[in-house]
Amino acid sequence: MCKLASEGWLFEVFSGIQGEGLLVGSRQVFVRFSGCNLNCRYCDTQDARKMQRTFRAEVEPGSRKFMILSNPIGTHHALQFVNRLDVPRGLHHSVALTGGEPLAQPEFCSSLASELRSAGFPIMLETNGSLPDALPEILPFLDEIAMDIKLPSSTGGPNLMQEHAQFLQCASAKSIHVKVVVADSTKTEEIEEAARMVADVRHEIPVVLQPVTATGGIMPPSPKQMLEWQSLCKRYLRDVRVIPQTHKLIGQL
Image (cartoon, rainbow, N blue to C red; front, side, top):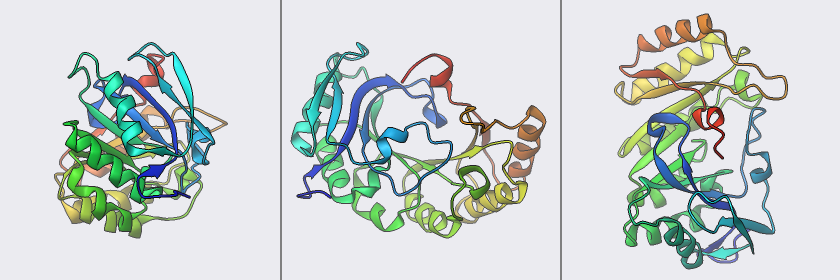
C-alpha cells in the first residue's frame, strides 16, 4: 500500500517502558506500524492490524498527550517525531519498531531504520518472525531483534515453524531473543518443537515463555504448566525465562 519506499502507514509513536522480552523495564520510543499479516486471537493491538488513515504521535515523552496526523507518512517526517521524544537526549535505550508487523511494510521499515541509524538511534525490531524474505534488507540497521514464535494452539492460526526457522537462521547474525506466548490451551508438543527449532540454530539464543494476558476467554497457563514447560525447554536451550507482560501490570501502553 506504500506509494513510495520512503512512505508508509503508522499507528502511533510514543515514549514508554518496554514490558516484554529481555529488555523489560527499558525506556524506548515505540514506532508502531499499521498492518499485520497475522490474526492472533490474543492480540492486544487489534486496532493496529489494519491500515489506518491517521496515526497519533505523542507530544512530549511520557505526557500521553497526542497529536493526530495523516497517513502515509515519509520516513524523514517520522524521524522528527522520534527526535522530539528523545529529550533529554539519551533518555531512551533504543527505538522499537513494532506493530502490527513492521516487516509487512518492508521498504518503509528499512528506509525508516536507515534514517534512525544515521541519526544515531539504536534500533530494536519486534516481529512475528513469519516474513523471512523481508528481513535481509533491514538487518544491517538493527541492534536487537525480538522475534515471536507463533504456536497454533495459542494463536488459533497456522503452523509457521518453517517460516520461523528460516527467519531465525537469518536473524541469528544479530543479537536476538525469542518470545513464545503460551496459554492454558497451548500444546506441549508445540513448545518442544519450538525449543528444538531454536536449538538447531543456536542453543544459546534466549527464549522467553510469556504467559498470555487473560483476554476474550483466553486464559494463562497454571503455575504448574509454566514450570513444566520451562523444564522441557531447558533440555534444549541454555537460557529460558518466564516473563509476563509487565507493562500491563504497571498500567503502561
